[in-house]
Image (cartoon, rainbow over all chains, first blue to last red; front, side, top):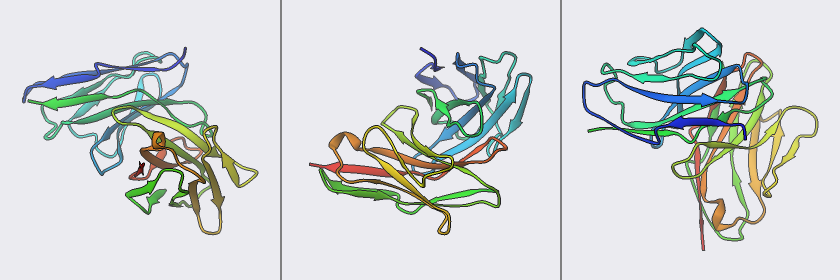
Length: 112
Length: 112
């Protein structure tokens, strides 16, 4: 079945470390998105990509980086510059504007 | 720019009672409207969408939403809720430019 796979489901990071969250889709969608979700704050857009080898900053890009070398993959790196990285991270993909987003099951990142 | 306001952050109801989750939006261009549902520790799932035509749209599990252009609203309703409907619900708008804007979410808690 087609869908989006995020891994790992849970991730623990020591302060000062970079970590990379994986997002892979087999839906042949052009656009992919990364969101951060904190309790009571809804979804905040980190980065998005509408085509391979191109991506744009969202509302809270500081301390994060992405790449889009393949249509299927959109990994997110949480760098040591991100001051408060503990959150639930969601990856999504989409096609035409009149379609909704397909979301992965999320990665919960905790800084220890 | 677009914005989405979900008027209630929490809605507690008893099982088999009706419920309405309210969503207002603003946009200077035409938008597509969506409702998503999120169960604990999972990604969002598309519940229903309004693209054009009939202003009343329905989902397969008994939810419906009505698009009101004059009031710029897209409220979600269900005539009789079940315990299993307990979840967080997100309203979203999307333009032809592609990106979605999400509301902050409404937590629906169904009590026995």
